[in-house]
Amino acid sequence: MITGLTKYEKVTEIFYNAADPRAEIYTHDTKLKKRLQAYAKKYPKLCKLIEDDEQGGLRFTIDKKRMSIRLTAPYSEERRVAAGVLGKENYKHMKQTKAE
Image 1 (cartoon, rainbow, N blue to C red):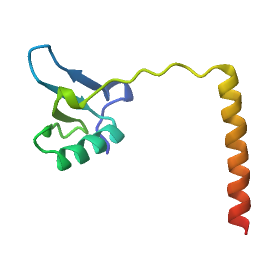
Image 2 (cartoon, helix red, strand yellow):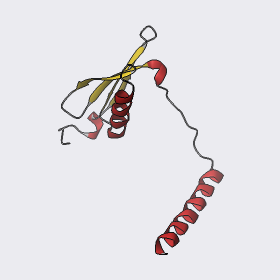
Image 3 (cartoon, helix red, strand yellow):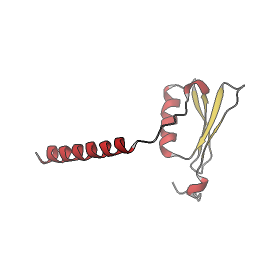
């Protein structure tokens, strides 16, 4: 969708406070929009689309208990190397399987 917005302007914002049991999520992120739309369709009492800004952004309201923020530690050098080796092995196996 052409919106006239720059990538810098295509934001994701999460608003909540300690008193309100619901949070608002405003996003232009395609993957997040799809996830929230699917969740809202499956659980309409917990999540609801409340605004489409016609610029590619959607605003949802969601029960705060249903969301989390996950922080992940960076891979160690050993884990990064091991993941690379495993990925290369799987890629070779996949190519062999397709050739057969």
